[in-house]
Length: 248
Ligand code: IPE
Ligand code: IPE
Ligand code: MG
Image (cartoon, rainbow, N blue to C red; front, side, top):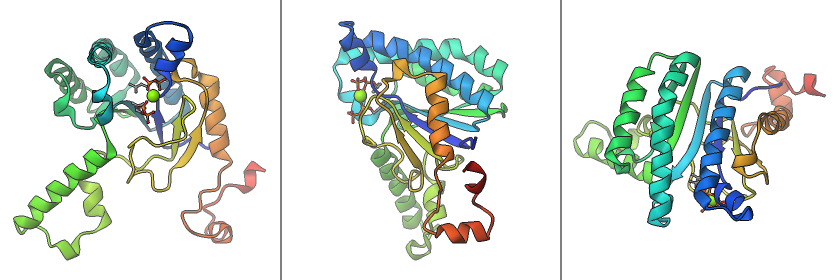
C-alpha cells in the first residue's frame, strides 16, 4: 500500500453526530478528540510523515460563543495531556493559522509544546487552528508586499517558491491525500494553495465514527490513484515514476 507522506484531514461531522443522538454538540467534539488520538497512533504506525488536522477554521469563530468556548476548552485539555504522549512517540507538534487569535492560555501551551517537541522526528502533527486559507494567503501577500516596499524583493522576480516560503506551511510539503469526513463535498477554505495536486477522498462517516479501518480504506483507495501532475500516463511509465503496474 502506498502511504501518503502528508495526510490532511478535515475532521467534520462532530455536531451532527451528537445531534442525531439528541446530545449537545460538544459531546460530538469530545468524542472527536478520541478519534484524533486513534488516528494519530495509526498514522504513526503506518509511517505517515506529516499529519495535518483541520481543527478550527477562521470562520468557526462565528459559531455561538458557547460552542467556541467549549471547543477552546477541549483544545486546552487535549494539549495539556498530549505533551507526554507526543514525547513518548517522537511526534513533533506544529500549528498553522492565525494563532494570535487563540486565547492566551492556549497559545502559551501551544508555543511550549512546539518548542519542546521540535527535535522529534518520527512524525509531524500539524494542527490547523483559527486557520483559513484565504487568511493565510492574505497574511502572506502582506508580508511579500512589505518586502517589495522595502526593496528586498523585486515584484517581477517573485517565484512560486517565494510564495511557498511565506505560507504558514513553509516547512511542510503539500498534502498527498485529503480526507474529509462528515459527508460534505467541499474544501471549506482549507489549504487552497497547498492542495493544487492533492488526491481528495470524501466519506459520509462523521469524524467521531472514523476509525483505523476507515483510514486504511481511504489509503487503499489513494494507493490506486495515478497521480499524473499534468503529464500523460505513458510519460510517467517512461521515467519509472508510476508504480501503478504492481497494483493491478
Ligand atoms: C467539525 O465538526 C469540528 C469543527 C468544525 C470545529 P462540526 O462541528 O462542523 O460538525 P457538523 O458539521 O456540524 O456536524
Ligand atoms: C470545516 O468544517 C472546518 C473544520 C473541520 C475545522 P465546517 O463545518 O466549519 O465547514 P462548513 O461550514 O460545513 O463548510
Ligand atoms: Mg461541520
